[in-house]
Amino acid sequence: MNAELDRIIARYPEAQTFKFGDSQTLCDELLTLVRSGAKTATCGALRDFPEGSADMPKPGRRDIALEWDGRPALVIETADVSIRRFCDVTEDFALAEGENDTLDGWRDGHRRYFERNGGFDPKMELVCERFHLIEDLAAEG
Image 1: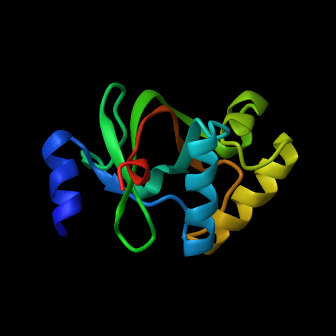
Image 2: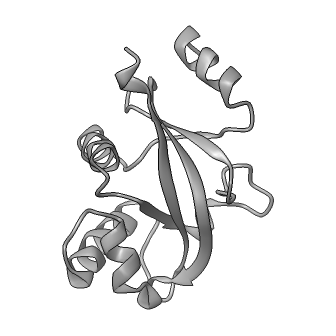
């Protein structure tokens, strides 16, 4: 770990670290959406969170979102976590993800994402997380 990340983890000792997306371009886009306030939710396939995994988001916990290169970018606090099937994701949640302006656009983008990352099924279960931006670490720079 680098010294900057060590310093941030010392301030948030319970935090997990993670990256948004599956490429540098997507990661950069999603961090920008969080910084702008447009993105206040995210989701991942439940299959990627083994039982008891520390990576599973928990309401009230603060976690550190990383830049693609591993530098700390943001601190978010989880407000709510729910498990729902892909086909049951609501328009409200999809729009809170900030990546599309329609539920159909969200479905298309996320279907392609899950196809690239382990497979897609419309009935697959998702970990749906709502969060608040606590700290923009790039602003400290």
